[in-house]
Amino acid sequence: MLDKLSAVPPDPILGIISAHAADPSPKKIDLGIGVYRNEDGGTPILKCVKEAEKILNSTETTKSYLGPPGVAGFNSAMTDLIFGEDSAVNSEQRVHTIQTPGGTGALRLGADLIKAAAPDATVWASDPTWANHDAIFPAAGLRLENYPYFDRQKSDLRFDAMMESLRSKGPGDVVLFHACCHNPCGVSPNEDQWREITDLTAEKGFLPMIDLAYMGFERGIEEDTVSVRLFTEKCPEVLVASSCSKNFAVYRERVGAISAVCDNPQKASDVVTVINSLTRKNYSMPPTHGTGIIDIILHSDELTALWREEVADMRNRINGLRNILSEKIANAGIERDFSFLQRQSGMFSFLGLSVDQIRRLREEFSIYTVDSARVNIASFNDSNMDYFVDALKTVL
Ligand code: LMR
Image 1 (tube, rainbow, N blue to C red):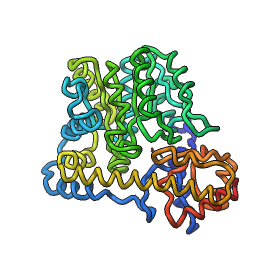
Image 2 (cartoon, rainbow, N blue to C red):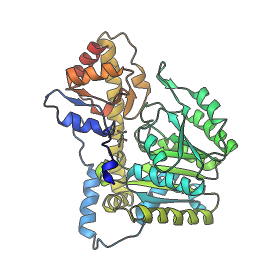
Image 3 (cartoon, helix red, strand yellow):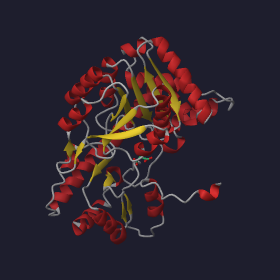
Image 4 (spheres, rainbow, N blue to C red):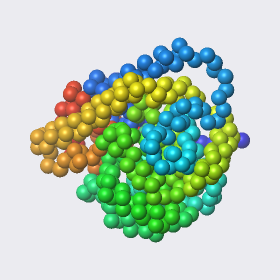
């Protein structure tokens, strides 16, 4: 049976990791996968995580099964963080959060939940969207289509075109939004635009599903949930797939969560039973080391304050790099305008290069990025930026 299977090409994002690792050049740069890097090019464990892990290791008394919902303290702390401790939806118990293996696990569980509720639903994702969205929803048996989002000429949001497209959606449709730090284009709606989007969502009655993978990397932890809170105030049902990979830098621990907002507390409890049953059929129950760590951080004022500082440091460094890169490109005499880098946010921006130019960067300069020319801004530092700008000038 298995001999019918042929090899599939590597994932476009993950394939970069191995290609970069195999390159012996001392000047190589990995601008591919979305991992935060510090000035030395490393991805250290956050101090708050190290501290909490010590506490976890010294207090944990069992590794026995915990059941499909995982760590209850993590789940409730994430609800408070994402929706607000004093929010109406929280105090009315219309929302529940269940831990998942990473943000991808949350998206897949959300997709399975949609499939269980409305097998013929169409999921609408922004054009472009994270490459794995294109795989996850069809893998759950759902139809995935796109709505206009990014203007490649102006490197900006196609707000009017997006709104026009969303006006044609209704019950039976699911619209996937990126709460902040849009992956891959770095362009987000502003608060006024989110108000218009959420008004339209409530009017048309489609289900909003929000991918919250970079909370804290755009403007701030609470600021980056503004869309979630607006959707939740206005719409009876909302799904949020969140990730702690980036903001707690616990990438390989696989920590994420699916939150389901329902019209009333009874329905919210019912939906949790469906999520738990989907979990049981899929991976039975989630790993708890990463969520145990985050549970400790979010229940300690001291560690939460340290975490907030560490997130702010990562955000500020990326924003600083955006300014420096844009200035260096302009000062190098490159005619094309890259000032959009300063206006965008989060780890990613598109450089607008052709596949040939991307190949030249890789083959002539050992600079690795995905073929879409999405770059991870956090990979730049003092010692590689000039080399990159020279290479960019050459291929342009
Ligand atoms: C990315 O887009 O690079 C990250 O979200 C990591 C991943 O799994 O693709």
